[in-house]
Image (cartoon, rainbow, N blue to C red; front, side):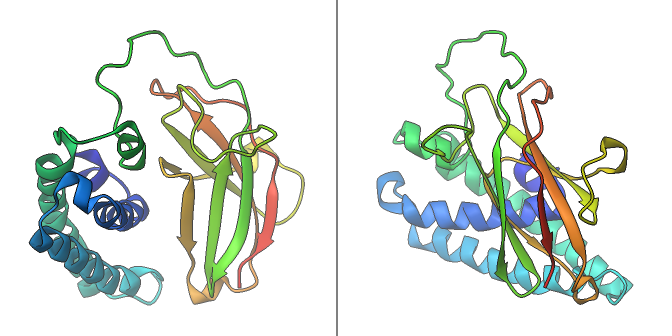
Length: 219
């Protein structure tokens, strides 16, 4: 399952946290056993312990990286099995739950999905020391959270400094499915100024227009 076995470490970090959060949120409706909740919580805590040690690649050791890779390989397969066994095929799933767990509706009509037409509204704020929180919402008067119809993910791109956006200078930071993401930075990045932009992406990998840029300093 790609969300746990074939994704970046940053995506894995977000997916583990969201899986644990949503399991607890819908545990009664989905009938999740207490021992499964405990196991997923333990996996998340263990992942935090190994992931934080490699946040700054200039300071971590090869042993730290190996420990992180081994932990992720073992727990990624286990999380994929737990997801399939207790969530994916659960008959109690509602539309709300499918959205929370980022599961498509198997009964949805099959049709050609066009590229996203609207740009997202991007906000970036300081979440904690050396952490930034990026949130995407729809470009409507209600600023509704969640992805527009036909959109399955979005891309975050960054440019160093506060100059106007030049697409040649943009670097892709990653592709994500959750519309609220926490980005952690190493201590060496304190004072670094970056500009963020984002765009919606459909299942075919086609992207829409850029959001307005957001410039912020890391601290």
